[in-house]
Amino acid sequence: MDDPTQRLASWLSTERKTEIEVIDLAPVSAGARRFNALFSIRSAGGQERLALTMIPTASIQLLSVVDEAAVRTLAEHAGVPVPHIHHVCTDESVLGGPFFCSTAVDGETVPRRVLRLVADGDPGLGERIVSQLGSALARLGSIDPVTAPDALAPESGNPPIAEALSQVDTGLAELLEPSPAFAFCTRWLERHAPDEPDQVAIVHSDVRNGNIIVGPDGLRAILDWEGSRLGDPAEDLAWTCQRMWRFREDHLTVGGLGTFTSLVDAYRNAGGIVDDDRVRWWRVLTTVRWGLGMAGQSRAHLDGSFPSIVMAASARRMAELEFDALQLLR
Amino acid sequence: MHQPPSAAELLRTVAATLTDEAVPALSGPVQHRVRVAANIVEIVARECELDEGLRERETALLAAIAGTDDATEVAAALRAGAADDPVEHDRIRDLLLEIVRGDLSIAKPGYDGWDGD
Image (cartoon, each protein chain N blue to C red):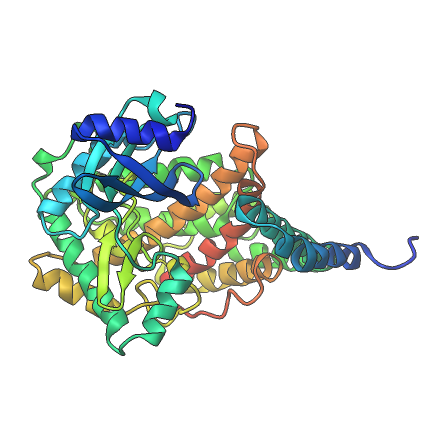
């Protein structure tokens, strides 16, 4: 029973109360924090294709698999395209970490392949995907936050705008070398901070080209809900517009796929309320925060808490975010 | 005095070896890390050649922002509101962009070819 395939099959057999065989278990990506694989199960009932997401015990878990599954299920019921979760396992002895199994959704996820599919597909495909993202985010924002798992509330208890400003303030203070560019941007953020949102909503926090599955028909699923939390829904709209997610297709604001207008029109048509100035503020905020996060990654390399060549290289990317943030302040 | 190749030329040779020979022979996470390594070596090669000139220019740009070439003091002045006035905002933003363009010429040449949305 040392084979993970066998252990998974045995666990699923108990879950489904029928003999299950696991076949073709193949890793699809191994990120810093999670292990993703695709596999098929065979039983008397037939064959099914599933996706496995496992969080190695040693790694930093943003949300527990139970809470992540709960958020994804809430989103699914609200009409957001997400792969349906079939099983959640918190017993770390099965695979070496908590995991869940969801429906395997066919399509492209790697950003450059997504862009190629759009370039080769029908002319309206990119804008359609962006519109679908807009509708999906409006539906996510329509979920009653009271139904969200408690773990989604920020530990500080701060409302979203204050929390975001506080994170940037901390990130600036922790820099090993000063950043006049980010000091300038932070002052602007403080002076132009919008009012706290009337009501918080579930924010995915990483909706972008790279965390979506698309096919020739359009958006099929939004992935990677581990960073979900309660916040200002305008943040998700802003994050999709980061220049980093355009992969050199700089003229198409949303993921190199389509325009901001398509995103916001669809968001409004699906019942969402959005203020362009608020989204712009979040674009600057998330750009600065990400740049400060890059510097933080390199500090984690330097202080030995996370030695990695990738983390070491991150700080040299901060200039990209300084540039983008300054360009947003024209 | 070293005989050529220079430090930057040697680093470019290292980067080319990593990119042209090591990367194709590898796969998975190790391949990714070696790509990152090649990129770092290219950054450091550019830094060897450009850094001195850029730091001189940065000193002048910082002084034009807030009257001191100490980056910590400039950052503190900006945080305290030295660019709150709309005219100052535009002037200082453009000077900061020039500083960042310098850093990008080392870290990611070509990234500054975007004027915002």
